[in-house]
Length: 152
Ligand code: FES
Ligand code: FES
Image 1 (cartoon, rainbow, N blue to C red):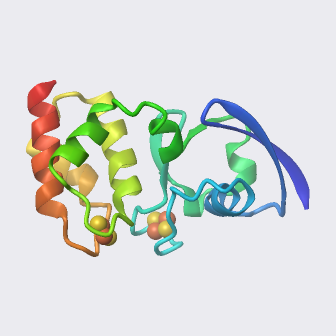
Image 2: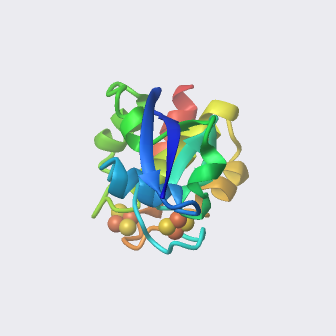
């Protein structure tokens, strides 16, 4: 075991874990930040997306030692701003079904809109198609993204 100090949601947190531990397990098991979800564990489904220095990354395939010194934001960090337009629109349009994939959807969308406030339909599809939803909420997600883009 080794100690690693990470910056998560603008707070420094020290964890004692084996090197090579995926960031996802550090967040969930060591820090009880369970908003970031485990789906495939192989970088495929997108349910574990967090922001690393403002970029959407899959925390299941990032080793803890590789994110020391980076700024990590989880869905809990984004939820510190309850009036965030994505949350408001998600609630208004009742996007979620079981909710499991939604942190990954929201974190992915947040970086897309941050980097490109008026993405084209193709740019939206390219970014969002990579996050799987077993409940098939894709149509409601599309509608919510279209509303957010229109309001920008
Ligand atoms: S759990 Fe990380 S991409 Fe599926
Ligand atoms: S809302 Fe259930 S998996 Fe997406």
